[in-house]
Length: 314
Ligand code: SF4
Image (tube, rainbow, N blue to C red; front, side, top):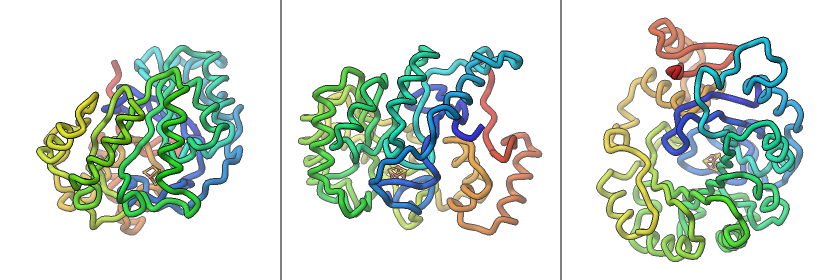
């Protein structure tokens, strides 16, 4: 499988089968907290990076419509959502709309698109997303947008807000907005109030409050404490909720050993060795040693070049 991964347990989307239609780290942003490492191709150019048919072929195989030789995964694990996410920004793929339409013809499992929302100023992107059941854009900061998200030079926060507003006015599905907070970067009172003003105009169905809890792209940044998130939740009000539990937030990532870091990374999604290496930042030999140890303890598994955390079958 090259484009489909999981199902992975997701706090926001239950048992989520991931669809990755972007080459690794091709993104419109280079967020300081990115859990898949630094952006290697910062671009706003939409292209058919991955074609429609190979993605559908893999999905059909997993969902059990032809070939039918293997028992379909859906019989073993309940899938709550099909989620476009993964190695970069999914709306950069100009085939996104076509892929969503074709998937709708083969399954009723609801479709989610995780996006950074930066290309919603484009009509073609808004149209592509219309058939998704949930669009989950992120919006981390208004005043400190450049510092936290390090955007492509042709993007600015005004353009992005206008795109989000235009989309929210026409979109018939649910919008679940995510805000990720980084200590001393986007958690000032002024910033939260600025966010609140914009969020009230977007009127999302849910607002998911998050902070760093896995190894980020830049190691010097810090998460918020649970109580700090609670204060922000009170200020923002509306449908805001903290999507992490206290224990997760208050685990100090820097104090984790390599195997704990690997387990945290793989909790989100299966990865290849090179991706794990890019995030952890130590040499290949040492990472492989840890991976083999974890595999021997049956904490992770290895299949077709992908390392993953086994999901408990239902
Ligand atoms: S938008 Fe997502 S993929 Fe892109 S840099 Fe930010 S966190 Fe990483």
